[in-house]
Length: 281
Image 1 (cartoon, rainbow, N blue to C red):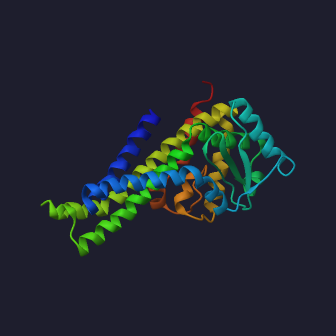
Image 2: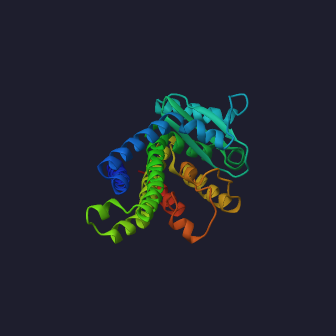
Image 3: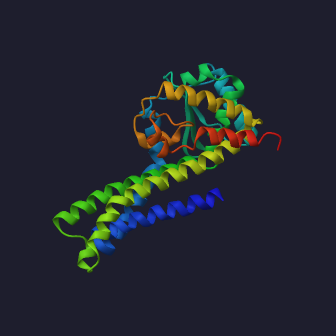
């Protein structure tokens, strides 16, 4: 069901992108928008992992430098029958982690120095299991594509706005309602952002379930999430780009209720409740 929901949401994002292409340039604009989406997703597929790791100053580590981390990753990948991903460390006291890469054969797991100090081995196993589940399900690629299309929609809505100011919209040429076009310019980027968040939240729940199963005990991850939520609220991470916040296991951004409303992560309380409900199954 999660994969079907994700496919539908991605399709809606694509439709919004094509709509703005047509709004700006008619049929030719719609075709251009599709080509733009293809080019952006091609770049995302090949280079997003390198960009994100560089953005956060993540450094590769081997077994001598981080024996516990390396051992947990190796044990879980063997259990899952996956290729061993590259292992990275970020020099920040804020405890967090993320996975990146286009497929299981080209993947990386990155954790902060803070998470290594905070979590015990069982909790770390739950976190790594979660990230490996993301890799196995290709969630990182899906979420990055969603973020890319949502960003393109936002950009094209600005273009459509300026086109309506200086040259009229394509809807005017066809005798359409210009008010509808203006409303779409305002609300479509918001809709795209909400859809992107829905995709990210859906994939987080799936990774929690898969990670808990891989780790062998749902409480490992549940206990880790409690600690990570507590410390990330008090020591929020400096995020290089808010568009990458969805990659982390818990939201690295600080903020009040408004930010929580538009968060790319499900509520921690609900994630923990679901994990605890898995116990004994």
